[in-house]
Each structure stands twice: as C-alpha cells, then as structure tokens.
Image (cartoon, rainbow over all chains, first blue to last red; front, side, top):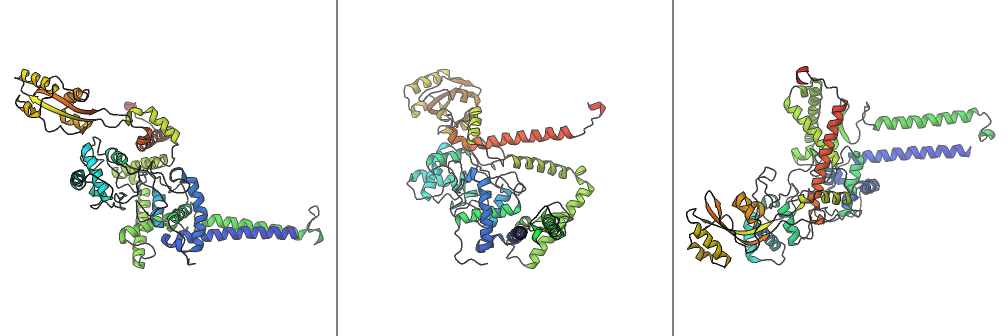
Length: 247
Length: 292
C-alpha cells in the first residue's frame, strides 16, 4: 500500500510542479518586462532558466561572466553603458529577439560605422567623404581632448572641424560626442571602449576601416519564455536585486 | 488489503486505483499539451501572445513594440484606449494578411513578390549568422583570403606639371629636385604644383587625385625619389615622393572584425545557394518547349 501512496504522491508532486512552473511561466510572459526585476519570485524563476540559456547561447561571444571582449567588439553586459536603448529588460529582450544587424527585419539595423579610410563612394555609408590620414588623426586628438587625455591642441582644433563638419561624425555620435542609443552610436567621451584599448591605433582602425558588430536574432530559435528569462538574467548582470522585493 | 503488494495476486482495488492514476496523469499531460502547444486549435491565448486570429498568434513582444512606437509607453503605462487601438490595428493587419494569402496576392502584386523574396533571403541570412564561428575557423579563413586584409597604403607626393613644349625644363626640374631644389626655385622653371596632392593621402585617394597613370609611377617611388618627366595629354608631370608607406598586411588580430563579417557574408551566400538548390530540386518546374 505504501508504495502506491508514495507513487501517487510523487505523481502529484510532479504534476503540481509542472502546473506551478507553467503558471509562473505564464505570469512571467504576461508581466510588464520592466517590472519583473522588482518581483522576487518571478525574478528568481527567470534567473534559473536564464542563466542556463545564456551559458548555452551567449557565452561564445559575451563570455561566461558577460564581460565581453574589447578585442572583438563584444560589449560588456555587466556595466551600465548601453549601446542600444537604456538597458531595461524590455530593451534587452528586443535585442535577444531580433538582434543587431542580424538580417531580422525587426533588428537594430539603422547604422554602421563607415570606413572613412576606404574608397566608399557607394550609398552604404550615406555619402560621407573619405578622410585623409591627417584628418583621421586630427579627429582622434579631438576625441582625446573630449576624454580629458593628453592631446595635441592644434590637431584637436582641426579635428573638431572634421568631427562637426567634414566627416559628419556628429550626425551619429551627437554634437557633444556622447553618442546616441537610439541608433547604437557609442559614447566617445567616456572611458568605455567597444573596440580595442581606446588608444590612437585602435581608434584609427575604427575610423579608417569601419565597424559593424552583429548580434544574432533568437526569435523562433528560442521559446518566448527562454528569451524573457535570458533578458532578465542579462539585466541582473548589471543590476543588483532590489532590497525589498515586491511579490 | 494484505495482498496489495503481491503482484502475482489479482486485486480489483489495486487495478482500479492504478487505472484512475493513469487516467489522471494522461488527462493532465493531454491538457498541458492542449493549452500550450503551438499550431493546435485552442480557445486559450498562449501567454506569449496577446491574441489569436484564426489561430494565428499576435505576439506580445510585437504588441509592446507597437505600443512603444505609436505612443511611447510600455504596456504597464498605456491607457486602455491606447492598448485597444494597438490591438485592433494588429488584428486588422493580421486579418488582411490572411485575406491576402487567400487571394494569393503574391501571384499578382510585384511588390508583395519582391517583399517575400527579400524576406526569405533575410531569413536564411539570419539563420546563417546565429552560429558563431570558432577562432580557428576565422583564422583559417583569414589565411585563405589574406590579400583582402591589407591596410591602405599612404603617400605624400608632389606633382609638378610642365608644358609639353618645354621638355628640357621638366628634365632640369627633375634633376634639380633630386639635388634638393626648393619649391620657390622650381616655380622659376615654370612648374605648376597640383594642389590635389601634397598632403599625406591614402593610396585610393592619391589614385583618384593623380589619375591611374601617375599613380602607377608614384606607388613605386621610394621616399625622396623623383620620377622622370611623365608625358600626359595635359603636359609633362614630375613626381616628387616625400613619404611612401606601402599597403601592409593587417594582422589577424587587427583585421578580425572584417574577417568575421566576410566569413558571415560567405556563409550567407553558401546557405542561400544551398536553399535555392534544395528548392529547385524539390520543385516541379516545366519549361516551355521554345525556351528549353
């Protein structure tokens, strides 16, 4: 008799767990994504699955700890600097769903860094003129001046003209160089660098040869629940859990 | 009750209980599958969707994105009217898309056809870039296409033009430049310096400014070298190379970004060709006699 009772109990627990997880999954999907981090039970449920999805799908680029790799232009997911959007769960979820320059029609496809040191009279780069090596070096000195690093004053004055007039850099990176998260244009004033060490050589390479990193779209390849969970997990890498979570 | 555990003995109660447990478990699994499986006809809207239109889901993420686009608000802060409007718009769109399929508009509307072709190509490309190539694969690709990964050469060259009627002046200027003649002194020899070059330029820009013929000569000049007079339709040209940095191969580390992009482009091309070959293989294509 006992064995049947235990078996019945085990089945009930199994079914109950399935129902509970299904209910939690439904709640997670129906919740406002940006409200999830403040809800302890949903947050915990999302983090459990999100971490495993991250390890299976994202670590090959972003690394196990999410710190990225500036040698390869992979952004650090643990800081508070966001290229696209403001780093909310919904912003992250959109990137996981549709990617960046991923060929998904709903991806962030608006801009790529033109190659100013290449002959690019085609339409791809928006008709910007090529720059001379001196102009590129002048822009770098101007950027160094904005970052508060040591720079060549005369070259920086010329570089400002290139930045704001000739090269049209302001068009994406904004007049003050602080970038534009609506199109993924990086902030050039802060100390965070997406590519390389932020030195003159890596900046020269970025300006002369262009950049255009890619993040794949996972819509249709992962379930909506997995995508929501991994978005919450990525959010958690840069945001500590609230001290008084709502339930 | 004592023979419940004796599996060799027939026990009606045990059979009934096991039967009931099996039925409950079966029903639970069937119910779970019914309410959650995609593609099945259901009266319940899956949690990841906001509506089903003839069983076709309207995704919650698209709905939220539409709310953000139209009204600049998220789902939690949208008014009931805003939510209703977006939902109605999306249902209307889905109904018209379904009607479009029924009417087979793709067979008549070239824009729909082009959009469908483009969408399928994009889908293939999106699949192709989901796979992250290994560093070894990228390095191997780099080694196989290493000529593509040279940096632009740089040159600072001066171009002096002389009249075709004064070849001696041009020769004298070339000789004088080799011996360190100043620009002012060169002017006395009636040489006109082109202002399109003279600053440091990338090779491609120098080629545009000098023209192909002069560039071919210039790129082979070493630092401080002077060319012989070069006859062109507009006169005789003498080139004085101040600095010439030939295109250097970029290391894998420096070119990796470009290598990855090129690798993906090739992967996309291969996948598109593969898909097209598959579609052609499974298709029944009949071609008119006169076009065979």
